[in-house]
Length: 439
Image (cartoon, rainbow, N blue to C red; front, side, top):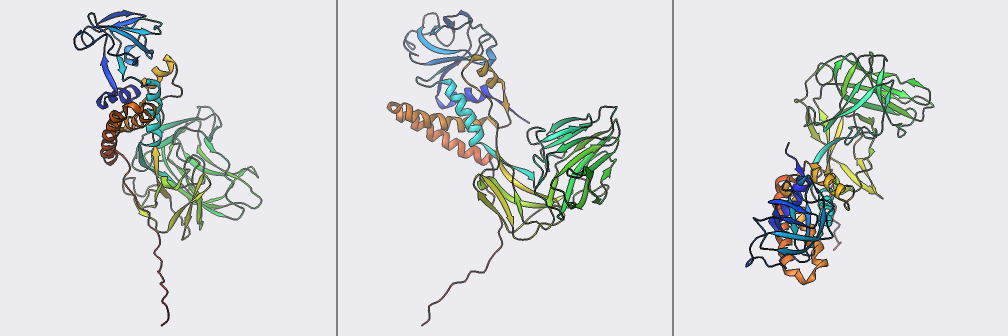
């Protein structure tokens, strides 16, 4: 899958006129200047004041002096020497790549806006399990899951079948301890006597996989209906039901490998209350605008029944996302039944930098990669830069208004190509009563 670097997104802004020159030194410079006898030479076209007030940035590609950033002092157009102030700590070599930005633009601000574009504009639909388990599909990492009995937990990103889920969890026993496992956080949403449905896809690389529901209050396993074990290599699923024991106030889901050498790969954990009508989504879903249709998974594998690839998604009618402060709750008109449920969520990309003010931090952001398509990310970044500069530099409003219009036009195009398609949510039809006046 193609990736874009932070540097590539930023330098793409040359197409929008925000970067004046992208170049490479033709000779090693000094701490006070870089030399480019190819692009910066020409007394008639380039006066010594050509880049006054502009900032120059050395990108990660440059190796030596990567991430260095300062102001242009003046240009010697006869030699192609660009003098800077404050001085660099080291001299840029011919391996360096430099960017001269339009006057008034701070490349650090551009990096911030690049990350804002990735985390608040550029997006896609992704499918997630509906589950009472915290982090049921290891979206980012194994946070909220503990390793038990000396097992090692490792998130597997982008593994088969990617059309059903985005990541899996590999549980590897240490070769000396039995019953190595991944343990979920305690689940307290179910009350004693509640019946629950639990489904987890599984592929056993070695040994035996066992799905366990643990009563934390009593320190004992909950009795399950259905086959809770598998020894099959290749994706199948374990499907069980059970009831919360009397006196229990919390349970955990354990994804276990029985033998000392067991290695088991687990898919997302689908857990809900049977006949339940209400599910709260994970904390990252802070607005119902991020929620798309809800589906039930049908024809899904259980032990030796159909393989993945034959499953189907049936959209559920009558599911209403409700906003409760910063949480989103799905309210079902009809009770949930014994099958896995999924929903579409609009997700954004991850920021590439944590800080922006040092050469080292800039180099980290330059080298970091995102799955967001380059054109999509660049158009969104250019839009934000133009909006910021319209406020910061009102005397150049005509130029930045043009950049904004270009960026918005391109963003609309790339949103159609790469962004989330519009998805309506089916709701139950109700009879409309229209009162009439008596005559």
